[in-house]
Length: 241
Image (cartoon, rainbow, N blue to C red; front, side):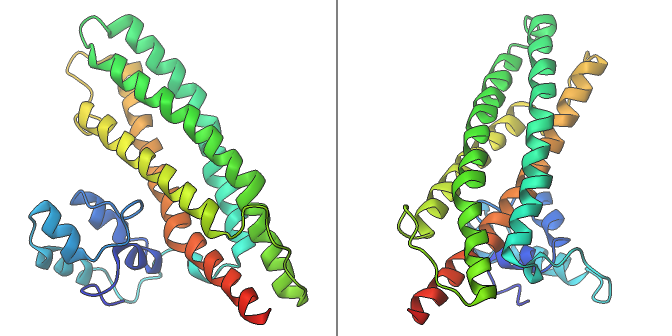
């Protein structure tokens, strides 16, 4: 890893512990991972040397995290679906119920709750459609590529032309979600409940923050690992042909 020249997404892909450093400084490592630290710091008018120093303090001999880069693509797709897609499905309904209740009980004193509720409902709707496109179109093609690679067989031309087409669409939708949750974080003052918040209020904000954190990991695994490797694998079939 060369922190001064590598893209942020590649740095996090190599060692997910670095994600906490970027998050602490408000640097997007998932949707906008295709930038160097210097480029990201320039946008935020920050000194990149501080980031480099913090990255250097990470213990070198510690087993970082799971090395998702080494996983077969079909296993990674399965993991994303069973871990992150399932998380979204399970937490969405609970959060929608909490936010609706907060609007009813506290909306008069805290009108910002209505905007938070609307933004999350938009996210819930869009993420449900987004995940279905991955589960029914993109991930099955990734699995077919892996089967063909292992068997030495040929790869049928997909109806979407090339894997880059659905990947580009998924990345665009990731950016929309990233922007949406940045707005939610801003409105909630980084998920800090107000002084008069009841327990439901506090739990809802904590769940929203956890939802965003999981979404960052989810998008990172796709944008920075699964998608680039799927594109590269498809090109290997093109060379063989």
